[in-house]
Image 1 (cartoon, rainbow, N blue to C red):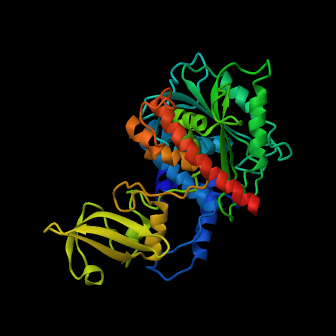
Image 2: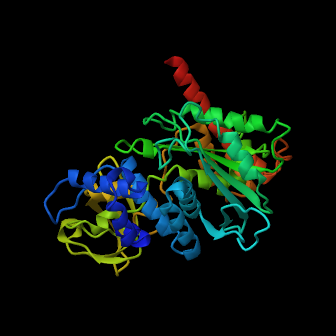
Image 3: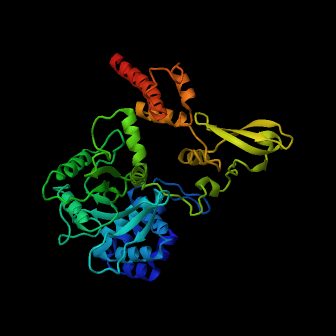
Length: 453
């Protein structure tokens, strides 16, 4: 809340507030609405305020957080700030900033392209995957709509044809020269049901995907390849409802990147592994409404008055009488029983004895746990996840069997390593075969249950 004021500058903010309401910048309009929304959660001074994250909060605080993520790149952040303040450039900068934030959270470092080369156009910026060193050129385009994000009749269209600009944007992005592979983000900026979910996928995304694939057959289409991310960042349309946004990746002239079709479990798994760093971007885009409450990585309950200290694996504590009668011990592991909101903590005392202690989590602490299961106790733990589909079960089994050698794998199918039935399989093929058979059993059980119903 204070960071965004500091970055944009109080002088600029005050000058905008002094203008008639209809002439104020979009950011200032969000700021004033945000202040009013805060006041609605009226509580006594000194108490913690709690209210739902809606489209307004996501637009305003999300903007602040994405600016913060760019703080390490002073030049790029400064460029974004200049463009954000310019009404004619605000929408483009706002979308690029969300894309930049998603890339950073997905493990990429951002750098400006060489703007000293005036002989040719450049992509907005480059993204370098920190783990692999892979470099991509980034382009981000958002459809303009009259009355939204500062656009008017002069520079904004209507909602009559929400996919009318998608191919134009794609062509424009691909015509810019680039030696690196391309990441192209296109936002359709269309109305969307506020109740979308993984199960209730917006039909407009499928229609947009089809247009991208059909474009490949057009002789006039650019020959360049690209990883395309179709988005619909619609929270600015639903300011006082739950944040609404969707993202769908698709390959343009990259036939094996997230294309619709029929795949075996093993085929799908191999492609997911091949393009994991790109799917991480899609996941980050899908979580643009989730941002931390703190800058130092602490959880909200860590800063809530009256909340007990969050236990950390590897740390030694003098436990209270309520938990263990003054026992001093080091936390070795912990697990939470979600049905009862209780943490079961394994503690070793200096004499080498092990103890299992139980602590009841408060509502605030339990909410933090649900959002940060793997790292809640200060050390990354392999927390079991709810598996919704047979394919997710297959992926989980592949993780479990990842370190099994051929002998151990053969035992799983009651065979010897040199058995003729598996002699022609590599270790990886055998691993996939075992996991696929197990997943198919799960799939058949689900089908039988549906038939019975």
